[in-house]
Image (cartoon, rainbow over all chains, first blue to last red; front, side, top):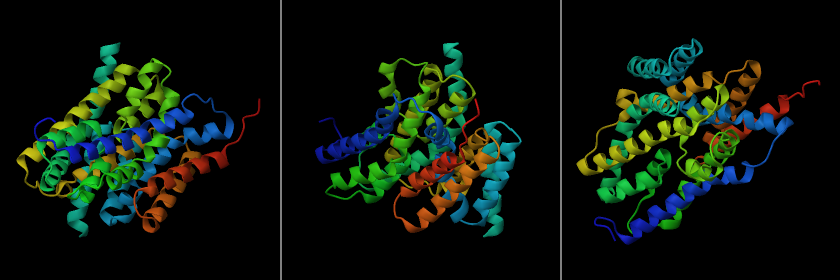
Amino acid sequence: MPPGVDAPTLLAIAAMSAATLATRLGGYLLLGRVNLRGRAKAALDALPPAILMAVIAPTIFLTGAAETVAAAVTAMAAMLRLPLLAVILIGVASVVVLRSVLT
Amino acid sequence: MGTGDFRRGVADIVPVIAAAFPIGLLWGSLAAGKGLSVAEVSLMSATVFAGAAQFVAIELWSDPVQILLLASAVFVVNLRHVLMGASLGQHLQAIPRRLHPILLAVMADENWAFAERRARNGTLTLAYYLGLTLPMIMTWTAASSIGAALGKSFGDPSAYGFDFAFSALFIGILAGFWRGLPTGAVLGASALAAVVAKSLVPGAWYIVIGGGAGMAAAAILHREKAA
């Protein structure tokens, strides 16, 4: 046992790694070699934007007005094709300002 | 070309790791507060490498550790990775097949999002993917270890808006996926389903439910092009 690591904690970390690995490899193993067409391909092509939207939706729609307005400001910056770093900075700056104004 | 692509990956991920650093510090200090050593914190960040899941796990952490509870919580929080891996697997043609499992094992939200963006606008190369991923793992592990070593709370990252950096990043990446009204329908369905699911279903199911709703919208709207 390396110093500073006890056995139950090591087992827990190993189990958590295995659980994460299962999710990361699972989809690839199920679909990685399948050649999709038509509707199934359209659905899979829509997966990246659909997941990204689902991840942020509670933050931007359920947290408060500051987050919702900041998300709209960020989306406008993004649609103007500003560099990604500028988009992030505008988003962070606007949420800080809006939180101090709206709460 | 290889090293150029690696540098492009690093350049894209720099803003992400800048925002992730204070969050790693916070997570490390919370973990130390639950009694984990610096070695255990480094090991977990390097091998699990999943921010949201690690925050949930530390919240549930107890003495003695409940291994099955922790593993199933991590599994549910990371379920979105099943869908993400299925999609990323379609874009790895330029990379030798024997490396695919390794690349997927280190797939997190941010390197995945940039990799998908790259695949949509060009070719996803091994160098670009490594340029995204290696700095992320190193920063996340280092930040959480430092947080655990210092062991005190760093306050709330939301005070500086860091917590919003990831939402802003994803909005910026989403703009690159915009292909007119059908994309709007996908995003609308996904957002609506995720918000409703978040309010009704405990845990992280809202991500899978929202993602599924967006994919269903795309499938319904799909029209075969006349040959």
